[in-house]
Structure formats: C-alpha cells, structure tokens
Length: 174
Ligand SMILES: [Zn+2]
Image (tube, rainbow, N blue to C red):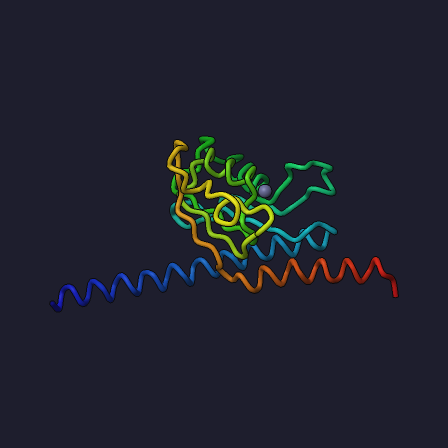
C-alpha cells in the first residue's frame, strides 16, 4: 500500500510539474501574441518545444504583413522548428498556441507528427481541435496527438478581446 501510495504521489507531483511547465511555455506563446499585436496583427502566438524540453521554434500571426492567408502562428512556428531539424517530423514535440488551432493548422500539426498540442482559449468559430472538429484525435487520420485546452485560457482570451476592443475604439476615433 505504501508503495502504491508513493507512486500516486509521484504521479501527482509529475502532473503538477507538467502543469507548471505548460503555463510557462504558454507565457512564451503569449509573448509571441504580444509581438503580433505590436505589428498590428491579431494576437496569436505559438512556440514548439522538443521532446527534451528545448525550444525548437516560435512564431506569431503575420497574415496582414505577409499578405498570406496561411501565415498563422502555428505554420510559422512549425517552419521555424523544422528549419534547424534533421527531418520534417517533429516527433515528441509539443506545440503551445494561445488560440485553438484552425483546420489548416491542426492539419499541419498532424502532418508534422507532434505528440501534443496545448492551447489557451477555444475558438468557437474556427477551432478544429474541439470546437468545430476534432482533428487531433480523429482516428481516421494516420497520426493523432494529445490535446490540452484552456491553459491560461482567460489570459489568452483577454489578449484577443482586448485587441478587438482597442481596434473598434480606434476606428470610432477620439
Ligand atoms: Zn490556423
């Protein structure tokens, strides 16, 4: 019983550590979202962390600046991560993104073979991991990944709603 108890305790301690780690990487993704907003872009950020816990790539939404409908944070972070990698595969990697990925990005994360996707707030209009589709866990695809949503969800949601609030105010003028 004692052994079993200590195992549970260890698992719980591990889970707490993982949660702390998820929060701290989500803060990095939020820093990317902040960089997007500073460039006048909708604030969405993403970082990709390798299986050994090192940062592999980061990116933020650049759709306006690049005039590219595919220049989402996740796409740019995936490209940054594979640029220095020996393979197009991101085996064992975790993607942290402030907003639930859309169908394109969720599909790209499947293609990249990431192990895990952690996101901040749900996207009820375009989210493809839980809200509209379940691309990360669709067994018909040749790869599935673990999904954890709602990490610093309120902070991520406020980052977006604050951006749109300020945008509307600036359009109304002083
Ligand atoms: Zn996307």
